[in-house]
Amino acid sequence: MDDGTRLGKVTKVRGRTNPCVQNGAEFLAWVEKNHPSEILRDVRPAFQHKILESAKRHGEAVDPATGEIVPGIGFTEGNPYISFRPERGSTVIIAERWHEIAGPSLLDGAE
Image (cartoon, rainbow, N blue to C red):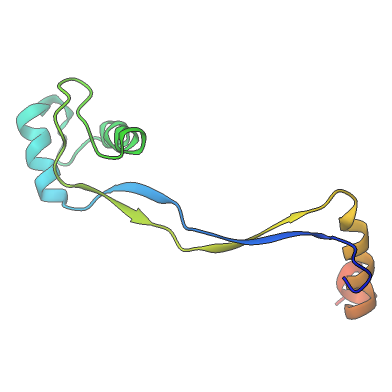
């Protein structure tokens, strides 16, 4: 603000990197060979989740039973977004300024 009051901190946050099945056929073939009890017509969602959680923990998908790297699993990255962390007490100042700029209708719920 013009008077030096800190309202908070704005940062651009990188998107999260998350494991995902990138090659469903390759992953399915691996599960059929190594864990056939986990096959329905597709990989059981709970087992797929277990493998993806392994990838999240280890940076790559690892079979918890054998230590083998699981094929067909990769990572996607989410979109970056803006984050605002208000300073203590700044929300009152922000609300007051918003009221000055936008008027009471936006804050009071009037249409």
